[in-house]
Length: 424
Picture 1 (cartoon, rainbow, N blue to C red):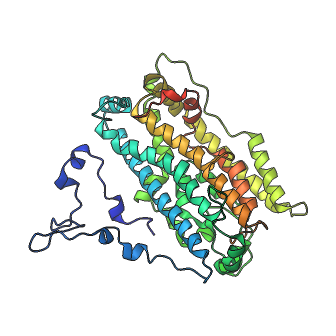
Picture 2 (picture 1 turned 90 degrees about the vertical axis):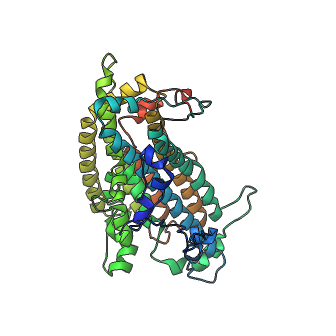
């Protein structure tokens, strides 16, 4: 099941196509516009309502109860999904830009990979090749930093500490939603895969008893956050088939590292960078200890041993991948030394910042705001999916930080001063 329609992905990154009003318009096989075709007498009749398909959009809510607060609960999660959809599209735009870059000969690749970000006063703006990727990367960071955390308080408190969503009212309809859970947000899982966290989604960390009881009728132990049991019909969205536009998004981290690898020859004469950071044994031990703690003092050690073995295998595979990123590390060093104010560095910097703004274990990251809000309304820690607060804390504080986006680039970029990445 694709995440989006083919029309959503029907875009051109070719500057000459975008600048041609006829070529840029989406048209069918008879050369008629898909949107706003003229009538027989040549008139145009598109309306705001038709363009946005408001008949479908505004009728896409089906509350389970007569409790008024459930309406904002539904809309809040749908707003998240729309924001996730835009993030995935923007990541797809950047991937396609990187793929085009990698397909070029060495001279064209070098010219565009090092193309400078223009000064704010430059009326011509950025190199046309980079414009879609620049705005896409800026949007990804902005959505994660500003939009998602701003939506979450609709289920918490407002600026004046006004209660916007009642815990007591939530309790009146919460049982009707079992076993559905925000842990089933497949689009978020695909974003996390794009940001290098696929290994984390394969670890049997999450208690699956509620899902097993309701979906299969059989007892189920711990399952992975990316498990088909949890994601259900959304699994194909999080793990799309090869060749699809969504699969290209999932490969974002690998494609970005491929671009950096091709920059490695530009590092001649530069100091050798430190190796790409590796997952350490203490990192894994802290995660295993946290997993054990979520099970309680009298829990069976068998699932702990299974999880520790899974994590050991995943860490070994991840360290082999990071060791193989040595050329990308050299390319990152070259980019930051030769062209720190380039369009490419701008894009990479914003994706690194978006990863932090989404997953950081402290501060005002989206997952932090989400976790705090859940704590307000689910004091027993269960949640409708049966995992609740312990899982949120474990994944955010101990699991996702082990797999940062753009690992061969991020820490080197962090050493630069803020003004080294001038905004245009």
